[in-house]
Length: 84
Image 1 (cartoon, rainbow, N blue to C red):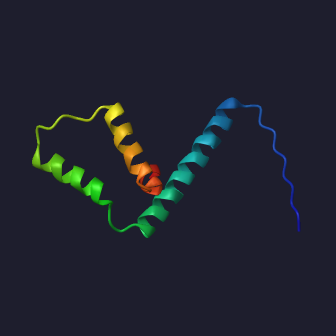
Image 2: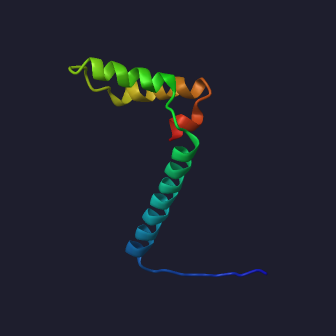
Image 3: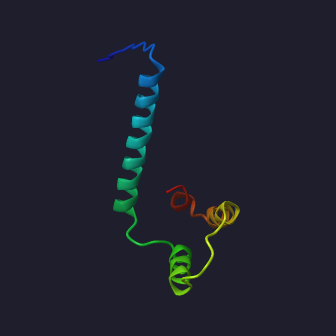
């Protein structure tokens, strides 16, 4: 059974709201899947959290530092964790 639905919306505000809702639903779905599939965090992430807790006066990482760290994790085969 094939069902075809064509909808034309001329209101950009509604289109933007629907797009934002669909993105939010996809993120929620991904978070639920991640929470169900991963019960522990990667060792690298746990080490960073411990270092931050031990050094209360540690600096906040810059965007470049975060991107560099995530790139290294991605190269080590942790693409799913990086994406989440």
